[in-house]
Image (cartoon, rainbow, N blue to C red; front, side, top):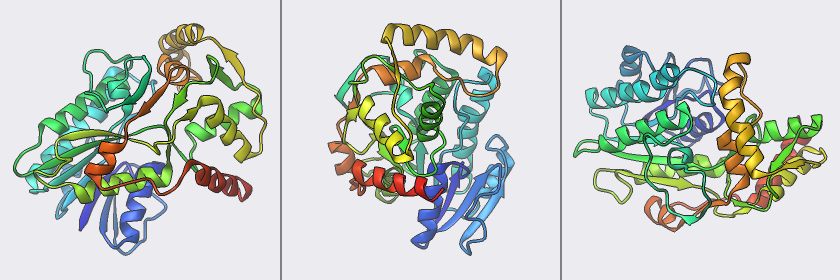
Length: 328
């Protein structure tokens, strides 16, 4: 099978491309910068922006399926910048799929498209909310997800996968930021830290997307649906952060701030930070709500429809993370 994978410069999408190559698929990698697996005999690298419709169409030539994950993330940037990449870039993918009669599209989404700020306990995926999101990122991804799912037809099968709190060796986002703040004495926990949350070890996030690709065809159980994917092992925020710090060999000595204060600070930072900094802020309202409220999801439908289950437990993942830190 020949698969176009977009956004392969990221840990997750690069891992997906590498796993497809390992099992013998041919992969076209569309990204803005060279990736580590370039040079593999079955890998074809296209250095281009997802906003370039001609480049996207050319990259999709001869492909049987697409895994689309290229996106603008975070909170820094204008509404236009987020919409150009996340909405219009996705529209370019759909046009390329139609142009080349590609029959399968896996859209890499985010749980934030259905985020309301309240606790989620054993919840289903929920519908992507448009007009209620608190950030350009979440809103643009919600529009993109809805656009993809609405493109389902007798010629194109589509599915949206929302991986929840992905972490693992080489992760500079969740693990990297927690460890860096622990080292500098700036690590904070919103609320008591006892809220139960789902997370996803990187190997499981990779295998879930590939399982979705394999399960997907017109009329299949997952066609036209969205799924939140996780390890299915909810743990407290304190437990997750402590395990990440212990894996890195750094002390876990966080400061605690109330959920109310965290939300207020996050809201203020979201408004002011882009005016002063180009880097990502230390806290946002979304981050405060994620750290201060329970959010874990029913995985039974995911396992059934995708014929998938996580292979690496959280404890095994933390052992691998510790080994990675020991060698770096």
